[in-house]
Amino acid sequence: EAGVTQFPSHSVIEKGQTVTLRCDPISGHDNLYWYRRVMGKEIKFLLHFVKESKQDESGMPNNRFLAERTGGTYSTLKVQPAELEDSGVYFCASSQEGLLMNTEAFFGQGTRLTVV
Amino acid sequence: AQKVTQAQTEISVVEKEDVTLDCVYETRDTTYYLFWYKQPPSGELVFLIRRNSFDEQNEISGRYSWNFQKSTSSFNFTITASQVVDSAVYFCALSEAIGAGGTSYGKLTFGQGTILTVHP
Image 1 (cartoon, rainbow over the protein chains, first blue to last red):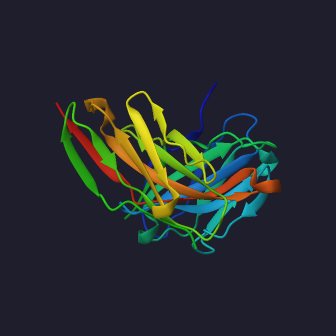
Image 2: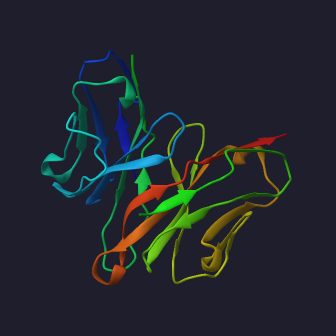
């Protein structure tokens, strides 16, 4: 079974450009999360999808960030326009939902974004 | 607000030594979940353990063991007889309980991570 896959693994862009990160969750996982780790700090929650709906987007830093999950499958996170402080590693995670304690969240390998 | 503190930024040990990674958390929830994840050099976060707030039993899995103490809000992780392959960044995380009866966990609040280096 394929794990959570993120594309690209690395991206270097100039300030002011647009970048789109993609996450393919594990097939059948309704929950999809985006997290970000900036410069050795803690990993911070960005948002949570349940299928195609945004369940919680309280961690999105500002309106330059737009996340979508059309059809409840893969998700994209667009940063437009990118700023220097957006540099970091963006993680995606997915999990199943269940009546009992559900499975853990499986994480992808992350996308390292560098804004120069 | 939830908070997780991993006071040890970096730990360096020699192979076969035991090492304990500390994790202290803060939450106002009565039901919550605690996690440990490992991030090897390849970058992905690998799930190690989930513990819910009602289960204070310590757990052992091979060379790994976890000590959950609600009285001190701590969830420490010990690696016995460390090996070079244990070198990684280790993250402790906390989640609120959501859903009917608190049966599911929500977003994770992570600590800053502890870099563990095991030397041969």
